[in-house]
Image (cartoon, rainbow, N blue to C red; front, side, top):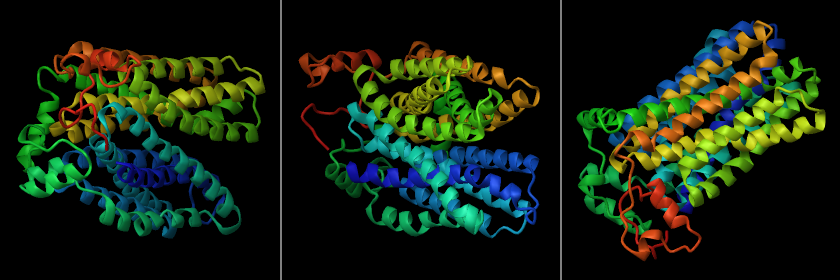
Length: 456
């Protein structure tokens, strides 16, 4: 299990690097008069990147069970690495935009696959923690991109940070091909039954069966997508989409506009930019905390609480607190804000059965990308109309909407998984009350029953 999570962590680290490097180098690109990029084009390129991520998430989530998790993940890494190479060599903004769109296709497909792999290979009662650990990589990569931008761009030009973005194809791809196991369910669906059972045995997973195996071929993928809108699932699926939209609305809105919103509130440039580092540092802490708390108290309750706490932090920032208090509130907000959207993925991972999990996560992350597309535009409208002071309150409302959507998921479906009560063992082996909580939340193993004494 740990090797699988480590490989996915490395890939998501490069994901966070590639997403953030554009913002870290944009000031230097705008100052490069020979390149011909202006602010309006820079904003459009950002939207095209997130649109590519949306398409990539939807496509990858629906072909990964057909073609295989490892193969599609490798191609995603190759795509966003190639996109970074195109950006580094671009002769004009149009070529640069093509590179960012290409990178977006790979970046969008990467996340749902990694989430699905971690969900499949993690112990059921540690799935939320594993998801949180995985997502710390995104923020670590983003902070690294900021550091690389500050180190290379001033003296060597903005192209060099993008050149660094080619490294994933050279580092991660060989490791994935050699060490990342294929999904037992996918192998079983392809008729490679013995290989599937061997991998399941090696990693302590339940043996795959026809009931928990994704259907192969185009017909199987269409069936998986249709199943998301089955009568007993459709409202829960729509609510998960809404929650994901709200989560990425917060993540991309605050990541893009936090410095400008703080400047509009009267803070200096250095302080405003440094707060972006503070909120990402809080995000790393939040990913670790959220997973552990969710494993103990239930991922639905924790996801909703995290949305509410993020909204509270944003509302506090709207009051323009003192400088010291601002740093504390921003760090506090980062703890909840980024991990709230991640907990939506954990809810989806537990709601959809193994045969439909990749398609479900693909659509949850894909539709959520619409929030990433809308949020930069929304922030621009607020700033452009002199309403920057209201920006934090607007985004706080998005957090409250996300909380309501998550809380309603178990209530609108009969498909929310239930753990059968079988006596003392039904509560798990821990004596901290978590077993009862898991029954209330409907926590079940992703690929079948798990014996209390099994380890991975």
